Each structure stands twice: as C-alpha cells, then as structure tokens.
Length: 353
Image 1 (tube, rainbow, N blue to C red):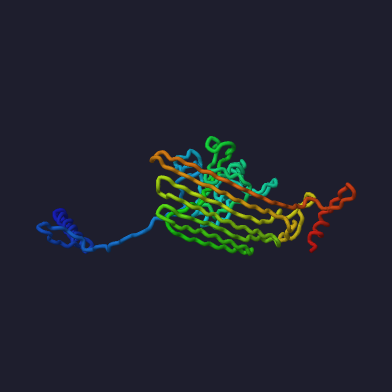
Image 2: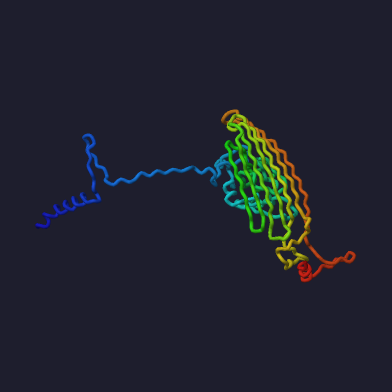
C-alpha cells in the first residue's frame, strides 16, 4: 500500500530532473516587463551566394517556325543541340552534332552523294535542311563554328515547310551579334596530326548595334598515308537596332573545303582484299573541292506586342569539283575479253610498293 501512495511523487521527481538537465538548459531575460526564454546555444549565420548559369544545356524555344516558338507550344517532338553541348563534346561538324539526336542515321557517300547524307526517321533529309528557317538544300559539308544550335523537328511537317519533310526538319541556327564585347579562341590537336582552330569575336558598336565574326581553319588527317583535308571559313554578321522597334541583321557564311576521297579497303572481284589498312587505295588527285557562299538579311519591325513584320532574303552559291576513283575489278583485257586476276594475285600486287 505504501508503494502505491509514493508512486506519483516519484514520477514528478523524474520529470523535474529531465526539465532541469543540461540538455534543456535555458536562460531567462527580462525584456521590458515580459519574460522570454532564449536558447543558450545559437548557430552561426550562414550566407549563400551564387550566379545563374546562362549557357546551360536546356533549350526553351524553337526558331524553325520563322519566329521563335516556345517548345511547349510545338505539338511534335523537338530535339535541340545547343552551343553548350557542342562545346562540351568538341563537335566540329553537323554530322557529329546530329549523333546526339535519336532517330537519325548519318551515311557516307553512298550512291555518289556529296555532302551531308542524313536520314531522319528512315527518310532522307537532304532536302529538309534549313538555315535560320530558310531552306538550305545545297550538297556540301556543314561545319558548326558559325552555329548557335541545331534543331530537329521530328514527324511530317509539310504544312509548315512545304514539299518533303516526311521524316522531319533539321534547322541550323547561326550566331547573331550581341550587346557587349567577347572573345573566344579554341584549338584542337589530335593523335593523327590534325589541327583545328576557331575564333568567335563580338564587338558592341553602339547602344543598339553590334558586329560578330566567327572563323575556322583546320587540317584533318587520318591513318591513311596520303589523306589530308584542308578547310577554312568565316561568318561575319552585323546587327542594328537591338532592342528597338526595328531590327536589321546582315550576315554571310563563306567556306572552302579541299578534301580527299577515301573509299577504304577495296573489295576486288566481289571479295575483300587482305592488305595494309593504312595504305590509301586511290589516285592522289582524287578530290572534293567545294566553295560555299550564303548571304542573308533579316528585317523585323514590331507593330505592337502581338504583331511583327518580318522579311528575310537569302542568296546561296554552291560550287563542287569532285573526282573519285574506286577499285572494282583488276585483270587483263585481250580485245573485248576481260579476265580478272585471282584474289591471291591481287593481294600480292597491292602489297608491292
């Protein structure tokens, strides 16, 4: 009976002990006439500062619709390869940039086709190439030194882009002058002895105008003993009225390609030949000489916040001088009778210096 009477007193003693333990220590201060409790332990102040990343990998608009359109308003799949991604992967050609896009296959010169040979969703995209929303159907090898991004619209889109566009549209967005000064120079050296250098220079001329010049020069080599490609190009642009009601942009893309054709290891008389893979099997004067000149202008006049008048003329010039030699059959010709060599004899002949 005595235990039952003392049990409440024991519980009160334990509660008081926990209340006045060091873990619950508190101090009392008088502020005016009110008593307030302040924790004895105070954490130090922490300040966090940062800066928003502006050249990230996210894309928000699609420029292929003549006017920039938010991606959320495009009722088709759009993949954008922007400048940040191309710089992070050291991409030097349009074909390399498009390897980041699912549903695209990049071919070589199958069928004697010169220039970028791209299939989008199983359909050829040779006539579905665009530059700033304007058709760019020339058969030439496209670089990325003058591009700000590459946009790929997947699915039929003939209502927006006219005839073709069965598999989709590939739109190239070129660099434009910006307010402010900036300089960027890059250099690349590979293990095959190839070198490449690019430059991007932007200068602000006034509060509403700027000029920008992008340039490229490269000497590309492979494991072949005589293969050497020499390319260079320049892309100047001038922009007036930035941020005003009327804006004018003048730009040009001038490039020259001096490349050699390489058909790889020959297959003679229907069978591949066991020869040195580093030997070039062709003529030393085989070539692909290309000259490209694209002149364009853009005039935009904003009538109000909802209506904009836009005029975009473009002139394109493409010149190609190509010669390629490929081995198909080797043998002797007596009159009108052709007798092919055996594969073993061909291997012996091709190995001879």
